[in-house]
Image (cartoon, rainbow, N blue to C red; front, top):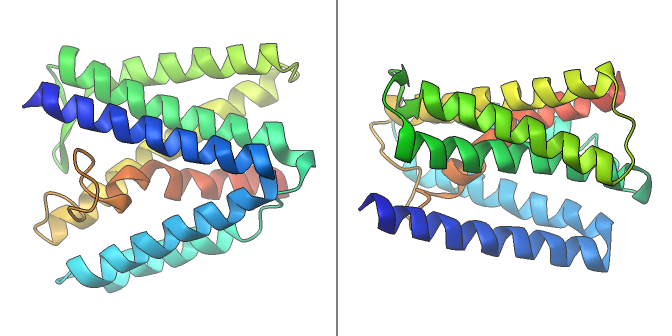
Amino acid sequence: MVYNNFILRFLFSILFISIYFIFVFFNFSYVFYLILLIYFFVFFEIYVYFKLYKLLPLLYLLISFIFFMTINFSEEFFLNFNLFILIVITFDIFSYIIGKFLGKNKLIKISPNKTIEGLIGGFFASFFLSLLFSFIFEININIELIIFIFIIIIGALIGDLIESYFKRKNNLKNSSEFLPGHGGVFDRFDSFLFSIIFYSLSIII
């Protein structure tokens, strides 16, 4: 079961990443519309599947969306935004992989599948790959960048836990069954929805 779930998550992750790069290849500004579509699907999931406590997750989604709307998708921010996406994706993927195959110590009750081993493994994998990305694309590696990576990882973790909390309050295992192996669109993009707030603030500040 774990193996089959891993394969499904892997295949859908490849699909999402491929779609993202297609948008980036044609025009980076098109990424705005791709993310807009994600917000729509998350809104739909919350509206349809969250029965008990709907207002709070909708408010959370609205706050995330407001910060998202402040982001400039011009070529000037191309590398910066893609670094942000890399941080979130690698943290999510490696936390899941390491947690599934090596995780033994539970992290927190509201998210029973999260493990300390997954968190540590995801953190270091994301941190290393982000620095490697920065080195390859000649992004200045300094204390500000290190703090940026750290904050985005923390934001990704918090986003994951917030979504898990909303699910538990609504007695849901998955936010929907739209994405096999992922548990729904909200499940898939939970880390992004909170960390995008930190990314937006990093640009404003």
